[in-house]
Image (cartoon, rainbow, N blue to C red; front, side, top):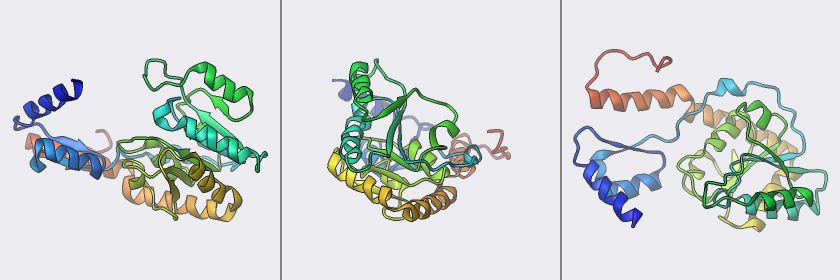
Length: 251
């Protein structure tokens, strides 16, 4: 019922001359093109990333980090299952989740379950931190087993921090990764495949370093915040028929 109402609302909006839809990946773009038409949709991949916030010294400890709210939809359970598999072979590695437990979300994992995983030594859990330094400074690998993304901010942050990432092979994740060069993609909801991809990076320190460097170059070239801002502002300028120069930084 809600989906029906939502689509009806989109049909109403598409009739307005000054309303357009910005989508962040080609999958969503195609879906919206079918509903509101190609002339009303615009593709701008990601919201961009400020690389200056990630200029801190990395420690590269034996830590795989998942920055995420504690939701089933974010693939947290798959991450924990992969950690259980890998801890049997690499007990000196830690698997850390940094994020809030979200009770208002229907996909929320009960706190009792999280604490059970922690008490059994499968994972380390820390509350969300707004400063990226305290999320990525110690890690050597970033993981995002999400089931659905618009365009993952975590992938942008991992690249900005020069860290390789293992992520689900889904829209919203794969656009930010060159598979095999800046990170690794794994089969959606497949903990075994996830553990295999993480293990490739655990076993190869040089590969982690090379991927991290290439990831930083890729994110800087394609998703740096000012480049994305210019694209977004150009859309508004076109809508408003604004001719005067806009200060990108202040915007």
